[in-house]
Length: 427
Image (cartoon, rainbow, N blue to C red):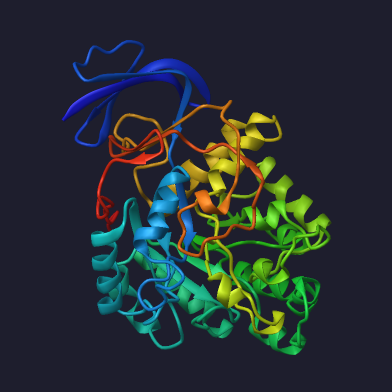
């Protein structure tokens, strides 16, 4: 099916009045004027690449009271995200060809958006890395404990990075040093304790180890959710094969702010000081950071409504990541060029998918936005199964239409396709 859309389009770093021709889900041409029979004009709105969230936990299989591929992908879609990459700490954990295949099969039936799957690496499946790469989009290794995490011994870092490099796939790290976490562990009664007892030195040690193990090789190494100015300083002079991401909650929230129910904001690594927050935001703003990632990790209100020390770590974010930063762009606190780089182009490049740019040959994934349509984030309007947001009442700009592979999935806040529209983006 061939069709075209017209409007003010973000092309090559700036906006142009142009038309996009679409054929078989791909952008076939971009010209000032196109005369397709099926032609849609978006007036007084802008057209941007759809986002890519390289870090989500959709909790399926095994933890579907919190989230599943239907609700998680619906949240992604309404937030302008056309493709997500799901983490392996589910039940069972995604560490074998069988469990990878099972998760792909589930997502193909339920996901509204396109998706990729990471394989978890532990001490037990290192020998299978080449085989596992045939089915997965990349690898995830935890160097410190988190929710159902698969710990990798730091002494095996270089071996694992070398083996992953032979596959051409990226490896992503949760960078907190396990020995450091154990040494600092104490009973926590609030969010400030969580920051103190998972101190930034644990992140610093882990990042040093990763950088040392990544030196002088070509493996694509990505460090997830950097949370501290100390970690950030280490990464400013990183080698070219190493990238890193920052989340909205680490770059927009801090422990000094009155955040309400503290268990809701318990997350690993922790939300830290206003100085850390400002440093991380500036790293996004000035291009030091590589990616904006949500680390969407929902838990239910009931699970969070307990003593702080017992509450699970993690919070939702896939639906609000793009809208929050679109509002910051509107307020001239952020640039379109930087946002598109962080949430579209560079994640696509890391994962090797033909998305993230409005360019001939790329997937026709884009969002239509009215920059004057500012709304407040309200949990009752969001789509995650967990039913809450750490950014309740924050201003945001949500997309009015979302296209994936040339098909309009959202029109005037109504879903236009059935679950299962999303496709596995391949291994």
